[in-house]
Image (cartoon, rainbow, N blue to C red; front, side, top):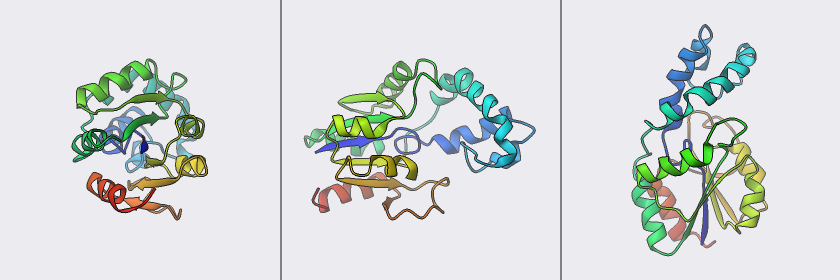
Length: 187
């Protein structure tokens, strides 16, 4: 099976780690973004440019310190050992993050995450279609809506940012749940 996997808040604990740092950077509006690293609060609209600067300047330093989600390394390694093809598809790209591909590759290696291919692009649907992804796992409802139709199944990894979103996608809260899903559902 070809399994597509997002990085941020799917393999690693991005929101928990980045949110406080982004809040500090975006001060004085820091209280409004405490629970969401990618705020949509209208009061923060003026901070979008500053957020882009944060991404370019602080991305590598902060992101290199983020730990993986529990069991991510173990389960992804197990899936790869069982013959599944692991395709990492992240929205980190050069328009937002400098050196996104190189950094993501090094980060995954440092964390011991095994994979077959890595793509850094906002167009996850195109990559899923080209790579013939059977199952795509992401924490973003919008990304799953985008790839729907290009993949056979999707899983939404629960996060603070998506927990209140109605979507109809199968939700998972752990890598063990993902492994169990793969081994019990025909794809």
